[in-house]
Image 1 (cartoon, rainbow, N blue to C red):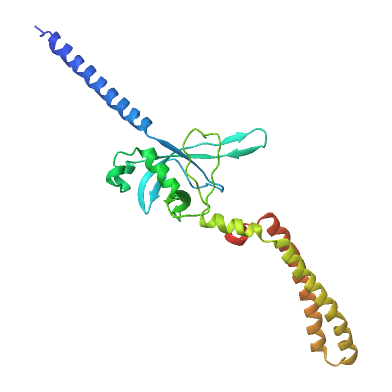
Image 2 (cartoon, rainbow, N blue to C red; image 1 turned 90 degrees about the horizontal axis):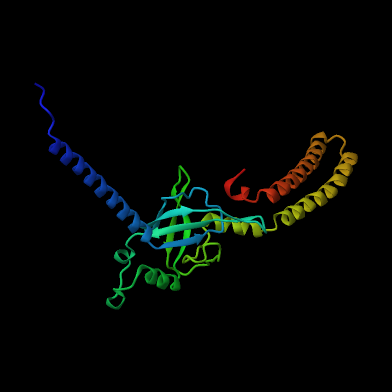
Length: 248
């Protein structure tokens, strides 16, 4: 005769499974609440953030102190421009930044606020040269920083400074490339006007010196080609100033 299963054992097994499931859910919710309770800060970078992604580290003096939590893109329907707020969260910052006894009970926001007053700012740096991944490097030394009171104005903002590449790009854009190239082009054209008559005089006086005449003619042609090349270069650099840094 087949033995009947023990209903009490089955019930106890099911009850244990339900309790275990509830415990797992409670732990997950607790972790989520603790993660959500973390203070969030926003940064606006006034350059391309290509290579920066959610989860990228935020470092201070080479020590990872936080991560990129969220990146948004907010359009402005009036100006057709886009603002890109980058949100970051910190680890236990009080364990990383040394505090005096009087500051021992400071909250994370108080610590970050005081650091901003002393010059705390962020900039983009390469995390991996091969993949082009970026991370955010924090520094407390004074620098030329910029703040943006954007759509996330209710969230504390950390100022930003241009990266090394951004600074070079900004300086290149300030150079009057077209004016410089046009002046050089005009100089070459004037030099061509001086050499051309000299070539004709040389042709009259030295008919036997074919090599000399050829050299003069070749010089005139080279100057013409150089003038055209410089004109083309001016047009290209005006449209692609970053080519001076990255190459064509």
